[in-house]
Amino acid sequence: MVKEKINIVWLKRDLRSQDHAALHRAEVEKIDYLIIYIFEPKMMNYEDSALRHQQFVYHSIQALNKIVKPYKREVTVFHTSAKNAFEHLIQAFDIQHVFSIQESGIQLTWNRDKNLKRLFAANSIQWTEFQRDGIIRGIKDRNGWDKRWYEYAKGSVIQNHFSEATIKPFRHPFALAKPFIDELENYPKSFQLAGEQNGWSYLHSFCRSRGENYSKHISKPLESRRSCGRISPYLAWGNISVRQAYQFIRNHENYSSNKRSFNGILTRLKWHCHFIQKFEVECAYENRCINKGYESLVRTNDEKLILAWKNGQTGFPLVDACMRCLKKTGWINFRMRAMLVSVLCHHFDCDWRKGAYHLAQLFLDYEPGIHYTQFQMQAG
Ligand SMILES: Cc1cc2nc3c(=O)[nH]c(=O)nc-3n(C[C@H](O)[C@H](O)[C@H](O)COP(=O)(O)OP(=O)(O)OC[C@H]3O[C@@H](n4cnc5c(N)ncnc54)[C@H](O)[C@@H]3O)c2cc1C
Image 1 (cartoon, protein in one colour):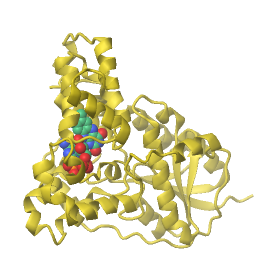
Image 2 (image 1 turned 90 degrees about the vertical axis):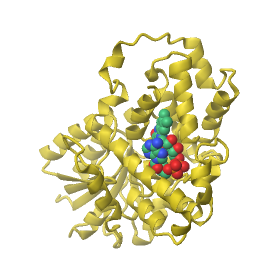
Image 3 (image 1 turned 45 degrees about the vertical axis):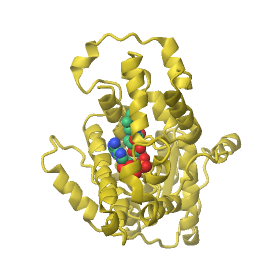
């Protein structure tokens, strides 16, 4: 039997319908495409991952499905390794091209991608990965990086359009099992809601009113919950692109009356990419000191103190409040994140690696490129 020729859009940390280069390219091609997402057990069981991340992803996909449903499209979800998912797809279809957006992830995802590259090559499948948020793959130094980043941030946002699908919904043996779906759907109300519409709501309310005290309140544990952008999970999982956020804030009618605050958040959008860029070049920072000299430091690493820190039971009210709040809501501000790291590494004399995965699991906005580099900075 002749297999149907198709392309694939493989979603990763880019769960949105607009400013999406991979979806755009798939629409331009002559043959139809499937949109897929893969929940990979190996990644989900890794020490940096938590149910809250998977729930955010799941609900982002549900939100995306609502947008593409009128075009008879849906995200085909797999619960298996990427290798299994693609091998199964290769059996069923004559895949021409895979489109995705680059992932500046940890060594595990980088290795997965290298293996897939081989699988695709062996099956004459082209794989095009589009740039993510102005982060440049394969650079040797960051000379001229700022200029290029601003070109990206101020460049045209992709207006995605969708055609009606000709491929039927694809059924396969790696669907999410009911108990796992139940877990994914049981999303705590205390977390920020997932999906691009919710990301946009935060952007709108920030520019309309919440952002006026951004600079004043950014470091206050309580007030910052309202005055900060609160867009981090949406950027981390790609519900909105950095460029969409940048242009929305910069072009907002309230920009001129809130210049200090709005410029403050715009600068941080660049930091976001700056840190990810560092990690893109060297993902070993996940568990290796950026300054190799620090590897020889001897630490106390008292397990009792580490456990107390993790459980929010150190006896320091602000430290414990932050950790418990993080568990409950998935977010604390920058200053409190820095304070938690500082207490662990300086006051309790622990190696930064003793706490990095713990906070990664708790941050709803866990973004490897920012997390490990920031963690190491705050650890000194
Ligand atoms: C130890 C530690 C770990 C961190 N881990 C993460 C992480 O995993 N994911 C993450 O998104 N941020 C991380 N941050 C950075 C920062 O704390 C959060 O981005 C910020 O608190 C998110 O809230 P917001 O969206 O309201 O930020 P806003 O202040 O409104 O800023 C807007 C956006 O700018 C970016 N941004 C803000 N501050 C920083 C910063 N210092 N460095 C890089 N980008 C920044 C974020 O994308 C943020 O969403 C970490 C900071 C520390 C100290």
